[in-house]
Image (cartoon, rainbow, N blue to C red; front, top):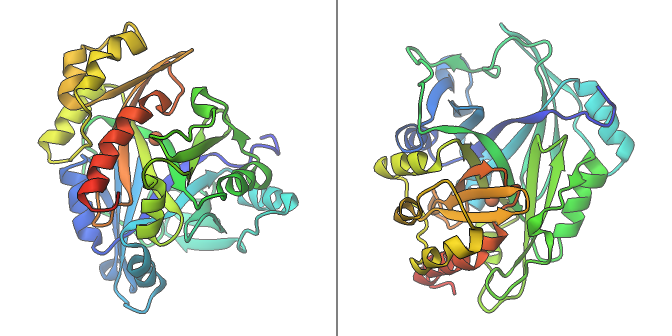
Length: 364
Ligand code: FE2
């Protein structure tokens, strides 16, 4: 492995939530994930309860606290339900820590070895924006997908289908005004990411978007992290609303891939997942804007799916409403058909939709 490539891919996303059991229920019944692992008092873990859920290549960990004085409890009190850890798989933790230390911007924690029946899991933790962290996890001496402390959930067979979600496309962080560039530097100078120059990359501070965004990527887009900061617009920025409620920077959304967005979204809706709506006028100009596409525009309109074209192809996307109590974290469902953009062309339509929700909460 080249010394310049010391990270591998996103390993798992861990949320700290008020009730892991209820979040697991939502992710199983509504989102179509399969619960595969459990950790808690029954498995010898005294201070927390966690569920490991999977769909496609997406590993999701939902953790809640048993001790009200714990860090997890404090995290939930401050932020509400939200992402604590976007953990990254590494091939060689010693190399990764050495490479990060060499760059001098980020201080990884001492390498920790956790032993279990499956072997030795080696990890280190680095802090990113807000209270969010990246655990760096080395599975090379460990022979299971279940983290230490987890037991397989009895009788669970990986469901063939779920809702057709296949993996993570990108994970977006919201940071404070004027903090986007320092965090872009954190990833580029501190972790050897590259700035991903895309269709979206011009200044996207428009009267509609009221945000600026840059995208960093690692190892041919194995890891893709857009970073947003609020900008002045006609209305209060949705990024500022996020920070006001989350009480710090944090993960705003995870975009999950599918090979058939119409089928996936139709299934998610039947299961009760709520999506942002799109003004129907969006679809009257769609054909002119994106040209020929495989999908039937009436089906896209029925499901409020957005389309964006760039010079390499197009992509289809839709955003859920925030899934917790605070207007913070939501999911994006995305299907790429050659397009590498993140939906800049949809900002106007999208922001009109988001702002209607914001107005209903009295925050516009
Ligand atoms: Fe996105």
